[in-house]
Length: 422
Image 1 (tube, rainbow, N blue to C red):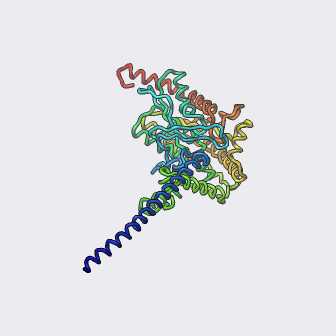
Image 2: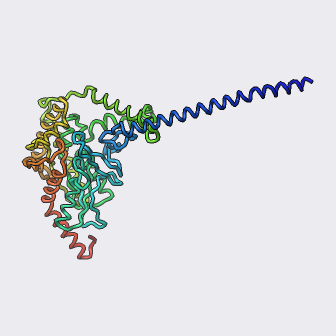
Image 3: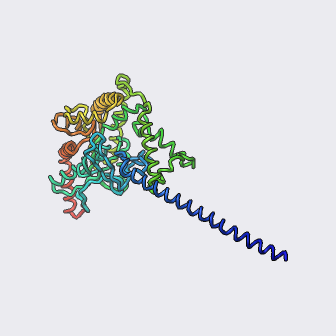
């Protein structure tokens, strides 16, 4: 009898519990559906805001990317991304959107390509040679030089753009030596001077004559922490999730904008007065740079190539057009940046003067005054050239190496005719 009562009670309890369990399941499912719809709605709103309401900075192609223009490199300090379209638009010329594309090696692409070139020329330098200022890859200095040589000689001469954004002479020397480890070249051209002078003005520490301060003071310590397994930036999870979710993409964008706002409003290092710049310190930096170019000359000769260093033009000595003056004013807008421009112009002139005076065991061609008296707009800021400016420099470089090219081509053709290798 008791067992029958227990069975009946259990059945009644199960009958009562079943609707309750169903209700709990129903509430859970409804809650999950509401959550999914809410997340989908938020995702849609974030997508629309990102697409139509948020503008990426001129130097990052997508909102989900880490805003790093050039990733860390173990001995160069940094390098360019391979197979990337770098937006090089100057913010004060927004109507002129420009891009420079890199190849699989992270090099700025030169359009002409020959399967069996008669000669190979390597060109090193900083962002002015990489292509900042040019409308596209066809109008960088190396690309225009390649085109001029082909048009005037008919020879299949391959020009390799080895320039790196922000590179100075030390990095040019390293990347050239690395290039020769796997490749050959007949002629090496270094178009530089500005960046070495720039770092001499901005970073008086002697270490910055080799790698600039942010590498040895900021990046290297972070890499060492990461190598030891320490947390470098736990709050940067939005970087990883941004490509997969518009919500995290929007959060990442807001964080970036806030960080940029803080950076811009933060009190920077006081700009040195020109009187505080030691002439001896600038002369030492010029001597170090000359040593790097002498090293490039030795590296080139060791690998059977000729070397020429071109001291590049800068705007400080040019009779500027109104448009150029407007561009430079757009670059140096604040009072502190105008003071910085004054300092840079002062150090640049001193650096160039000292570099000219030094005895040099390599061929050095001074092109610093090439654009000074040209009554055209040739600069997009204080140092980067537009297409016309780049063409004039490429043309001047060609004129300086024309005889060397002629002799090299004749030698190669003679060797081929004699049964040697071209």
